[in-house]
Image (cartoon, rainbow, N blue to C red; front, side):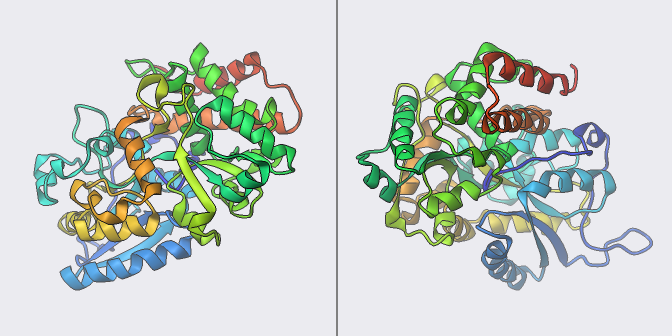
Length: 438
């Protein structure tokens, strides 16, 4: 999803959504017919370094679409901290956009609401066919065996980014490939007064992404094969403890990171305060922070063996952004035309170049612009060592309750309170109790 999806369900839960009617954009007259059939509303997620950056990237493309089709697109860029709540509220109130970006990990949850247009063969045909998209991206568009709830727009993967100046100053010659090497490198850095690796302890979705990958490395999935929450398995507990121990035990994460939200760890990285970050497609954000391309390097995210792959060698979730249409939009033809435009080769190249992401469209992905070394690491990760988060209806609640448990554990670590296997298990047990019973 990316930039990081900080899911905050708050008072609105998916249980309210499951029987809700979808919404449509534009305005209506008293009879309920659309009085602006040539208008679409579009909620875009915050992909760039700021909302203003996104507007500058997107508005020229929306103007191009209007010139080609006569359909005006009203744009709102929504921060990740608000996006999920806004979407859930829209599905219950009937007041929302025609087209919207969703974090790909939410696809199954929002699919279960019944609010989104299913992308069956007929609808995919209108945008060039399902086989235009790479398999890894399609794997995060909804529950397997059902028509996708959305269409891939941007593809991303996690990697280890390292600050070349801080590495050089500490005498570190190459990026770490294993977690033991991450800890050793981090201790060298912290010995010089810097922070070894950055985390964003208050960023719930980033917490989930990291512990999900660590869970795979410990043989845990957080859900059973039949979709039941399984947060307290030995592997899940070990994964969460390993992540929080970067601060609690190994002291290579600064305590202040417990309160960090979206992009704050990247800011420290760009200012030579933090030597490493685990992030997805960070190059555009580094540039916006004033960092030159030759000041940072990128390597595959660490795995215990140092050799990324499948299963316990997984080193990223399949990150990305999907484009969805509210099923009851009054301008469904225009909405599908907009999806076709945004996923066309030309726009895929423009938008993914601007955001430093990878096109999920096969033909666009072959463009030389996406063969740079930094993107090559991400492409290889997506192709060989990334796994999709569980495509279950309760996924967004999982992000909230387990992400919050990790946040609370980082707060304990920052305050000097012990983080033990027992305390981690207790937090995860509390999180599991908040999930719907099956």
